[in-house]
Image (tube, rainbow, N blue to C red; front, side, top):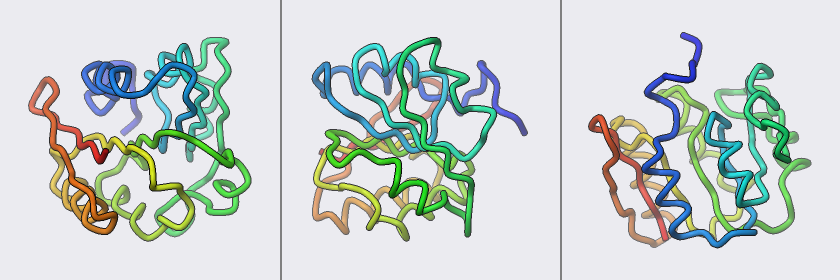
Length: 161
């Protein structure tokens, strides 16, 4: 099923506002999975967005600079080589919001070696059982607390400070 502007799987404005409250302007963020909020983030941050669907590359940028990392799916995750070559050396924040299918998103846990995890992390859609379990696993692996937060429409997101 294709994603649309009105799709309830899009990042909630509540999550956007939360990130704005914890991440200082001018910070560098990496988002796993781009979307309609990517251009909003780019108003305040340097954004590196990992995306597996060519249709979403630059679709949301609205003339704002977003560093898209096109990483087609390989073995139920993004292409590791594309991620390695596209990520900045240093970044301040990680938004885990992809791949967007709930059965695939937990695959992130098999690819932690690609990412800096010594930074704050937000995980969207933890109301989905598989994603919640993966978020709990990540927090446990990092020895940090998973804070569970609610948005509208019975959706939830997690925060690992």
